[in-house]
Amino acid sequence: MPIGVIINAASVLFGGIAGALVGHKLSPKFKTEINLIFGVCSMGMGISTIGLMKNMPAVIFAIIIGTAIGLALHLGDWINKGAALMQKPIAKIFKNSSELSEDEFLTQLVTIIVLFCASGTGIYGSLTSGMTGDNSILISKSILDFFTAAIFACHLGYVVSIISVPQFLIFFVLFLCAGLIFPLTTPDMIADFKACGGFLMLATGFRMIKVKNFPIADMIPAMVIVMPLSYIWMTYIMALV
Image (cartoon, rainbow, N blue to C red):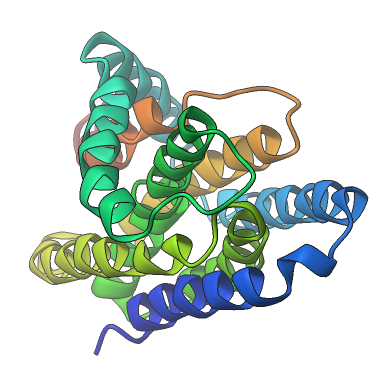
C-alpha cells in the first residue's frame, strides 16, 4: 500500500483547506519566518540520509553528471512548462478571488505545482517507499507540505488543495515503478540512492530559506543514474583498486 503517497497527498489537500479558512488571521511576519523553519527541517532530513552513503565517489559523480544532464536538457524549464499547462484547467475551476493580480496568481500557482508534484524529495520519497516500504521520508515531507500548502492557500485559496490530485497520481506511478526496480538492487545501492536524495533535500532547504536558488528540478536525473553508477563502482572500479 502506498501509505506515504496517500499521506503526502492528504497533507496538501487539508493544508490547502486550512490555509484558505484561517490564512487571513496570520501575519506576514509569521508566514515568512515559518518558511525558514521548513527549510531547516528539509536540510536536517537531507543530512540524515547523506550519512547513509556507502560509495561517496559514485554518489558525487551521479550528482554532478545528473545535474549536467538536467541542465543540458533544460529539464527545469520543461517541468515549469508542464506545470503551466496543468494550471490552466485548475485556474478555470477556481477563479482568482485573492488580492493578487492575475499574473501573480498564475505565477504562484505554477510554483506550487512544481513544488508539490516535481520536488526531488517527493520523487525520492516515493521511490524509496516503493523499493523498501520505508515511508518516513514522505511522512516527514507531508508535515512540511501541510504547512507550506496552508501558507500558499492564504494567498491563493482552495485551489491549492486540488494540486493533491496530480501529486498523488505522479507519486503513485513512481511508487509502482520502484517495485519493479527493487529486485535489481543491493543494500549498498539503495543506501547510495538515499544519500543522493539527501543532497537534493539539502539543496531544497537552502532554496526554501532563500540562501541559494539551487536548480532542484535539473538535479533530478541524478536520482536515475546513482544506482547504476553505484553498481559499476562496486563491481568494476573497486575490483581494480
